[in-house]
Length: 53
Image 1: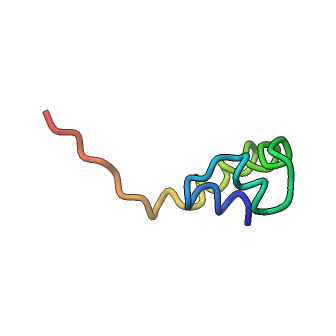
Image 2: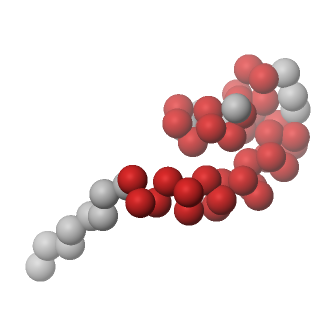
């Protein structure tokens, strides 16, 4: 939940840690390894930006 909240609401790790009752460093340790996995899982749902020349 903490990582999903960080990605969805753009909270800082310090604020998310306080909301979920953990330290900033614990939030960071959860965030770092899960972020790329979640990004790959939802990549097909994110529209690609069109580059204009």
